[in-house]
Length: 419
Ligand code: PLP
Image (cartoon, rainbow, N blue to C red):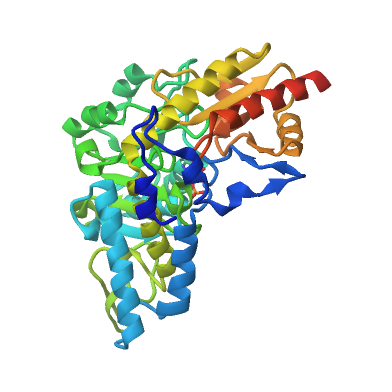
C-alpha cells in the first residue's frame, strides 16, 4: 500500500489508525522467527520499512540512478531534482524555514559529530562550557568529549532524577557566561522521557546560548516544528522513522551554519580549488562532501510521506495508548521494576524483572519470537546513575498491537517461571 492508501486506512475509530491494514504495508511483519510470529518491539533501535520505501529504493536504482549535482545528462539532472525534492520534504516535515538548513548525513551520530566538530572549531575555546544531560545517548556525549580534548572546553551535565526527568533547577544553575551551547536529547532512548525542550530552550536563549536537540527518538513519534520549538540544531536518523539506513539529517539555523567551517573536505563542498587555497560551497553543500546517499534521501522522503499519510497526531495518540497499556500490564507483573516513570513519555519502556539478567530475559523472549533490546542502550552514564548493568527495553511503533504487548507479558511470565 502506498502512502496515499495509508491515508485511506485512517479511520474514525477509537485510535484513528487501522493497524491491521497498516501492518500489511510492512512485509517483514508477516514473517516468523523460530516458527513463531515475529513480535517486533525494538523500534527505538530501528523501525521496519513499508513497501513504498522499499519500492522507492528499487525504483530509483532501476530508473533514475546517476551521480547527483555533477552531470549535465538527463539522469543526473533527474536524480538531482529528486534529491532536492527530498530535502524540501524534510524541510516541510520538521518545519524548517529553508532547505539550506537541511544537511543530509549518515544519521544522528554523524549529524552530532559534524555539529560538535564544526561548532567547536568556530565557537569553542578553553574555559568555555557545553551543557549536556545525564540521559544522553553516547552519540551526544562522545563527540563533545573528543572536541573538549581538542579545544579545552568543559562538559557540564544536567542530572537525572529518580523518576527519570531532568533536574531543571540544577540546569538553571549550569547556565553561566561560560556556557556556549546546550545539547540535549528530546526523548530518552532508555527511559522514554520526553524532555521539556521548549523550557530548556527558553532558559538558554535569553543568555544567547544556542540549543541543539537530538531528535533520534522524537521525530518518529512527536510532530516536529524546529522553528516553533526554537531549536538551533536538530538531528535525526532516517532508519528510525521508517526510512533506509545510512541517511539522516542535521538541521541548523543558517545564521550559525554560515559561520561554521566544513566538517569534511572533498567533492561538492567546494567553490574553487587551487593548490594554494580552496573556497567553500554554499549551504547546505558546504557540509555534504563527496557523493551523498541520494537514493537514501529519496527513500527517506518516501518514508516521511508515508508517516504524513497516517498523520503524526494520530500516531502520537495511538502510540501513547499502546504505551499506557504496556505500562499497566507490565506493572502488574510481580518483581517488575520499570526504570523511569516521567509523566511525559514516549513509546519506550525499560525494565528489569527480579534478579533476571536483562540479556537472559532478552535471549529467552527471542526464542518466543519477541524482539526486544537488552543492555546499556549506548547510555552507560545513565545505567551508572541507576546502579544497574542494563535493562530490557520494549519500544513501540504505530504498527504494534495490544495483542503483541499481551505476548510480551506472557513471555515475561514464562521466563520468570523458568528462574
Ligand atoms: N540519539 C539517540 C537518543 C538514539 O536513541 C540513537 C540511537 O539509538 C542515536 C542518537 C544514534 O542514532 P544512529 O545510530 O542512527 O546514528
